[in-house]
Amino acid sequence: MYEYTLIISQYYYSRHFFIVKHDENFIEKARAFAEELMNYKRDANNEKELYLGDLDPRYVGNEIRPRYNINDCGDIYFLQANYANKLMGESWQYKNDSRRERQGFQKKAVTESIDKHHCENKVFEIVKKHFEIA
Image 1 (cartoon, one colour):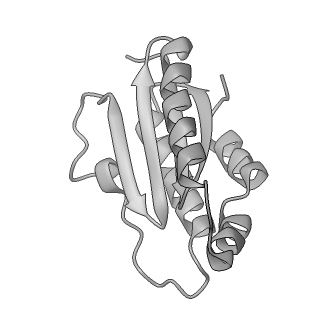
Image 2: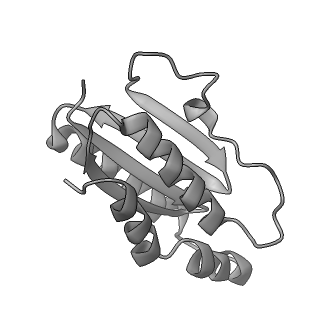
């Protein structure tokens, strides 16, 4: 079993990163977390059914995989490792992607949507509700 999970929440060019402790209830926690986060990231008028991507029960077997992806209004990635330092290095690559993508002109509608649907403090509260931050 893995020791840690890196959770990456992406919304347009905005990404937030959290390293959490991995436990035997990972799949159930990840599903509940993903549902709450997707509801936060969606507009109120979005009636599309929630889809858990790689965490959908149809795709999850008995073995914990090293990576799970969910593509909805923005993406959610779960990366597993036995060492937090490995995940920290992974997060730096995603952070550099965000830095590169937000350079130059950004539409006002995009920045306003990020402010409304991807506030780091709100995402942190959702993560903390479902996982133990490492």
